[in-house]
Image (cartoon, rainbow, N blue to C red; front, side, top):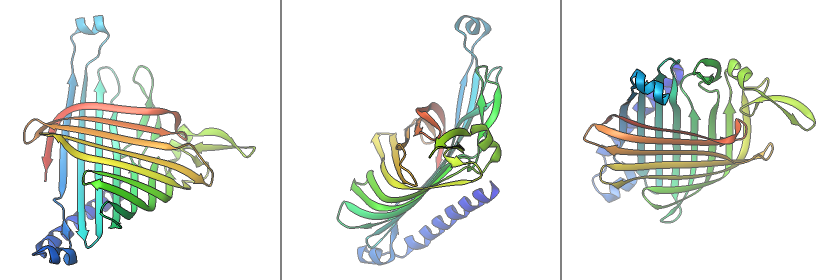
Amino acid sequence: MKKFLLTVSYLIFTVNLFAQVAQEAPKNHEDSLKVGWWDPRSTQLGINFSQAGFNDAWSGAQGSVGSIGLGLLFNNKAVYHKNKGVFSSDMQFQYGTVKNKGQDPRKSIDRIFIDVKYASKLTSTTNWFAGVNFLSQFAPGFAYDAKGVKGNKIGNLFAPGFLAEGVGLEWKPVKYFVMQLGGATLRQTFVSDDVVFVNTQKEVTEDGKKVFRSYGVEKGKKVLNEMGFQVVAAFDKDIAKNLNLKWRYQGFVAYAPKTKPIDHNISVVATAKVNKYLNVNFTLIGVYDADIVKKFQLSEGLAVGFLFTI
């Protein structure tokens, strides 16, 4: 965990230092093509609160319980242009907890998302690209029973974790929307925590043999390597005054070492600014991965908090 945080901190520091140096050089359009320039960079730090309270009469009649929640977020986005090439990095870290009265505290959201990409123009709206993205969580996650009592550990950092590297074509008709088609994409699924593996393993039959897998990773291994086809669509725009909408869809179809159903990953974030620092945000995350559960998993949250832009 410490190594991961140090690596991320170093990457952010390096990107921003490089940006400061690069921004000082260009004096005109011709120079900017040679030296390069950065789009306005955005680093956001946020803290969100949620709370619900009921007196004994309400709780008894309506069956409601009080709760308190706390959420933290960190976003960093950088885009660098030089000649026909564009380098971009997008980091989104979110972590939140909620405590219902009479129950153990649990995570409300836990997400690590890092996307790094280089693209070069073929036409005014079409690029070829090469990119890497990573998805996982920060802290251990647990199963809970109907009464909210904590049970077995079923998730952790790199358990699961998903790393994908791909090359392909992207279509970007406007600045706030892009669609990518990655015809050659490698994906690694990690389950590095043995306890998580034991608690989430499932017995499946493959080629007449019974094997145990957790998040698709076979027993005795830490990583599942797959090759497939990936499609990504992303949107990020202020759709009204003080209202930003950001959504991203990522689909992956594995065709080696075997063909599998398509995996879907959707994230939607709508942020409304009340004033310079106070905001209201809505988050929706949807996941379908047959290796985890053959159902579409949904998580949504609405919170009020403070957002600081650096």
